[in-house]
Length: 212
View 1 (cartoon, rainbow, N blue to C red):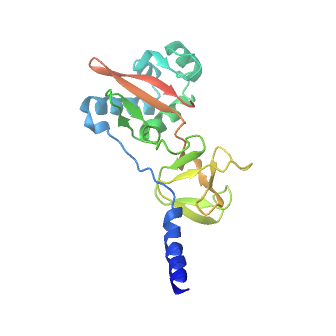
View 2: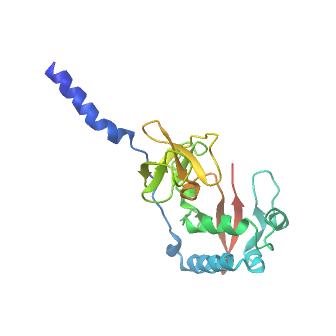
């Protein structure tokens, strides 16, 4: 009897650790290649200025814009309207680059790390990565909602409730309960990502797409 109780107690002690969410910590390998690091620094300045001409100069002529076959720089311009300062492109590309990335085996840079380092064993369509430390999980999708937990670089399942919005993402915690995190801290691995390939003495963006 005592041995059975001891075994139960041991399992109980292990349970919280076993339920902990997997983590995906930020990675940024840009400084491994000085040429790319300088290119990215310049590109981020271009994005901050919303300089369409400078941006289009680094977009590859056959850039992949999605997975439906509508590729090329003309389709990129039609989709994103980069000459409009209110284009979503500036925010989407800026946030993609802000999340670092890694080099692949061919020497191309892939951003963000949430895509390039996503664990293959976890469903990319059903989970999101938390991209900060101590991110508040609230009981309702509101900045006044009670804080029911905090997450740091965790991978958590999406909950998808009617209360989902652009500002709030519903997630399911390891205890099975649903909470809400600010969407700016919840990144899907199948969200927008960018590929950059070396072209002589410069780099070109060869893909900017979301989905699969």
